[in-house]
Amino acid sequence: MQFDFDKLIERRGTHCVKWDKPMADDVIPMWVADMDFEVAPAITDALRKRVEHGVFGYVAVPDEFFQATTGWFDWRHQWHINHDWIQYTIGVVPALAVIVRALTCPGDKVMIMTPVYNCFFSAVQNNDRQLVECPLIYEDATYRIDFDEMERKMCNGEVKLLILCNPHNPACRVWTVDELKRIGDICRRNGVMVLSDEIHCEFVYPGHQYTPFASIEGHQEFTVTCVSPSKAFNIAGLQTALIVCANSEWRNRIDQVLCASEVNMLNPFGVEALIAAYNYGAAWMDALNDYIYGNYQLLHDTFASHLSHLTVTRLEGTYLAWVDCRVMGMTSEQLTQHLLDNARVMINSGSIYGMPGEGFIRINLATQRSRVTEALNRMIPVLKG
Ligand SMILES: Cc1ncc(COP(=O)(O)O)c(C=O)c1O
Image 1 (cartoon, rainbow, N blue to C red):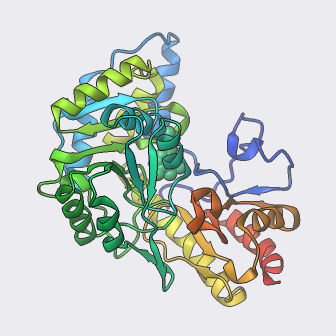
Image 2: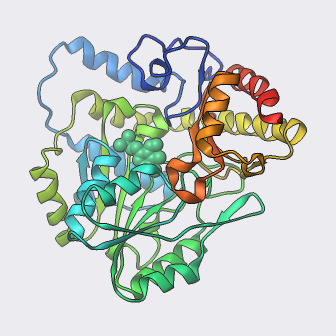
């Protein structure tokens, strides 16, 4: 293999949330969405060159940054973005809060499709907007959208914004063109804006295809998209994210909130890493997808052989496995504690993604195969009963 994803990297002692927060040395951390792999060599080379310069003052974001972004989405995802549609900020989570503030008013209703990434809740509630949930339907180890419920909850004109997660964390879905069109039709009919968080867009497995929501004909007029190389290329600590919006009036409003919140500056490392990732990272990304899918297959087959009372949700995208443990009769918090105490494996509790996540657990698969194997061996006796 050209890239060695099996290489064990010691992350403890590097001020790393994922590994240093659990504290105990015997814990395998499979929680926060952060990968244990070294980044693509092109990124390390670009950063090394930048470090060797030795001066790290304020950054003027260069044209290359925008060209690398538009080029990547153009050839890899057939999404044609104009350079001037792009704004940058320090993370997708800050971007979500900024966009909610820019496009809606206090008290407005914002819809999310639960279970969903926990910061969708805080982006709405911490900004004094009201949450409206449109729960996904769980059936046959996968999720689908309740379009009737979505329409019913939007039709009185009170919902102003839908926050979409495409691909969806933690539901493991990569929404199809047909599903995205139906969401778009319902939103357009009811005057609802769409904020599409597409941070997981590079993790897509055989048989599935990521489609940018805004790339569908007619969608770009009412859509703001957030993307970032952070999740895909494992550079979340470099704090670089992009907001893509074709609507110039909305862009002005977003720009005002970005400036007022003072989150409109990037750091030199994030800029260099993005350029290297989008210009030279494709082969690494493809190899990584194969590796992570192998981890998923291992987890899936292990559960099927040893823990068949639990259901592993079919993984179409993201590197986060989602397991239905409701038959065990424990809350997600109890399951999380049980796995930590007795298997020394740290996972995320499903209930942090909303009530429909209760009884589920989320397992981060972006680690070396030997660690996944060890974690599964420890989990089998603990989850057996
Ligand atoms: C859907 C989604 N959006 C955003 C983020 C985090 O984005 P950032 O680190 O750029 O703030 C995550 C991290 O897991 C995520 O799953």
